Image 1 (spheres, rainbow, N blue to C red):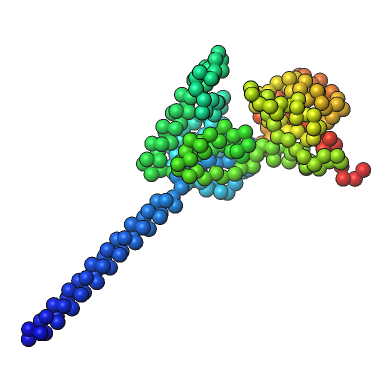
Image 2 (image 1 turned 45 degrees about the horizontal axis):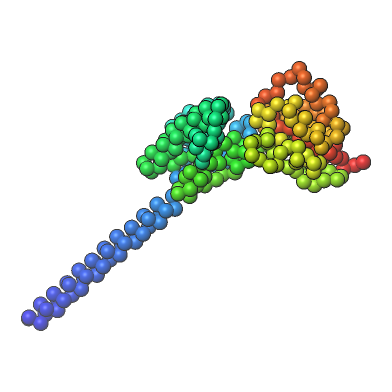
Length: 296
C-alpha cells in the first residue's frame, strides 16, 4: 500500500514538473516573440509622395500614410492629399519653412539674415523633433512626407540622422525630375554627343561644384531652381554653354492641369520669359539632348 502511494506521489510530482516546465517554456517563448515583434516593428518612415497630382504617389507610400498615427509634412502636401490627411493627426510646416536649414550647425556659424533664418528653422525643427519623440514613446507610427523623392534635394533628409536610432524606413517617390522630362517627352540620357546628366541647384556658400564649373562639361544639366532667378542662372550657364544651346523650363511638373514647358536657347530664353512670372515649382533643362532625334 505504501509502495503504491509512493508511486502515485512520484507520478504526481513528475506531472507537476512537466506542467511547470511547459509553463516556463511558453512564457520564455512568448517573451522572445514579443521582443522580436517589438524589434521588427518600424516606427519612423520618410515617405516620398511624388510630384504634383496625388495619383503620382506610389501604392506603398499611400499604404504607409494610411497606417501612420502621426503625419509630419509641409502644408502644400495637405492640399494635395487632403482627402487622406484630413482623417489623420498631423503637424504641418509652412510652405516657406526651411526646416532643414542649419541642421548640425550652431548660431555662431551664421550672421545677419542667415542667423535669423537659422533661429527660425532651429525653433521649428525642435518642435518637430519633440512631436515625433513623444509619439514614438507612446508606441505610435510616424510618417514624414516629402514631395517628389525624399532624397533628391529633400528638406527632410536630416531626419534620417536625427532618428537613426529608430532604424528609419525610406519610401522612394517619383521626383519632379522624372515628371519634368516626361513633360518634355525626352530621354535625358540620349544625344549624339553626350550620355550624362547632371542634377544641380543654386550655388550654395562653400560648394565647389558651381553652375559655371559644371557647365564646362557641356553635358545635359537639370537645375532645381528653388527660388533661383532665371537671369542669374543664364549668366552662369553662359560662361561655358554657347548661345545656341537649347534650354527648357518646365513649370508645375506633375500637375496635369497646369504643367507647361517653355523652350528656347541660352541666347533667347530671357526674352521669351520677360513678361512671365515663373512659379517656385519649375526646373530648367539645358543641353543638346533637347534637340536629339533618332531619325536625322
